[in-house]
Amino acid sequence: MMKKRLSKTQKVAIDIVLIAIMVILFVAVLGRIGSDQTTKMSQIVAIENGKVVSQPITNSFELKTGGKQVIAVKWWPEENPGFVTGLVIKDPEGNRILACTGDKVDMVSHIMKLQKGTYEIMLTFLASKEEMDAFSETYNLGEIIGEEFTDYAEDGEWRMEYTIEFRN
Image 1 (tube, one colour):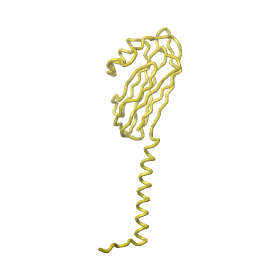
Image 2 (tube, rainbow, N blue to C red; image 1 turned 45 degrees about the vertical axis):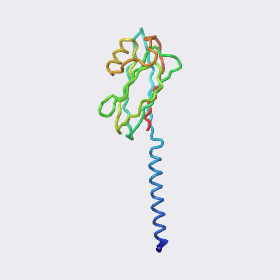
Image 3 (spheres, helix red, strand yellow; image 1 turned 60 degrees about the vertical axis):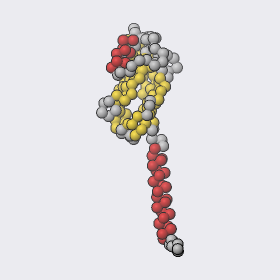
Image 4 (cartoon, rainbow, N blue to C red; image 1 turned 90 degrees about the horizontal axis):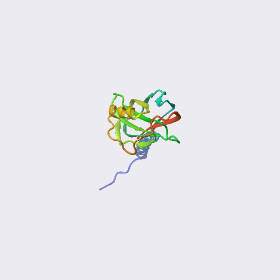
C-alpha cells in the first residue's frame, strides 16, 4: 500500500485551517473571560423618628450575555445600619429571579439560566418588623436564615454601597 504525500499547497491549506480553528476557539474563550457584569449603586439612607425618609432605588441593568450565571450581591457597611435593605431582581419578563434582605449581605445565588436583556434591580429600605414581614410576604421569602434583625429604626444616616454582579 502506497502512501500519498501531501503537496506543499495542501500542507499550507491545512495549516491555514488549523490556525483559523485556533483563532476561533481563542476568541470564543476570550469572549467568555471577563464577560461578568457588575452594577454598583450607592445611597445615603436616612431614618428619622423611626421612619425611612430615603426613597427606594430602582435601576435597570442590561445583561449583554445570556446563559448559566450566578448573581453575587454585597453590601457590607462598617457599622450596622438601623434598617434592613430588601433586594429584588426581575428578569426582562418581570419575573422575580432573586430576592433577599439583610442589614449586611455578602452572598452568591445558585446557578441560573438567564437570558440577555434588561433586568430591573430594586432596593427597598425597611425600618420596622411590619415592613420586613410585608416585604417577605410580597416576595415569598419564607423563613429567615441566620440571625433575625431586631435593631429596627435606629435614627441616623448611613452611606450604603450596593454591588450586584452577574457572573458566568
